[in-house]
Length: 129
Image (cartoon, rainbow, N blue to C red):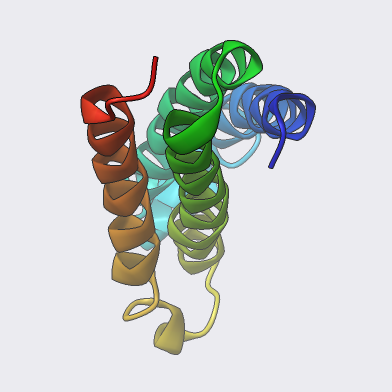
């Protein structure tokens, strides 16, 4: 992912994260309460928004980086994008009554998010000038 694609992902995740958070707090409030899924929805929105901000910062760093740092930031951006879709997406769907097999899928999204943060650590430790 180049910095523009990362920035696009950040913007889309930020936009939809705010919208879905508000939708869950207002239009879906009763449904989520009845299902006992308010916390799941809030967790999905929170992680989505946190990683939107992380992607925004990564885009800025990518724009000025090169070599090993740039490659590792690409890994972080891809990991966060995939992780957010899988983690938050599966939680949103579960909260709305999606298939139960999504439950075991959610941790794979979390692992992708962790991999992204590990890639940031690796980028910070890279010896590139």
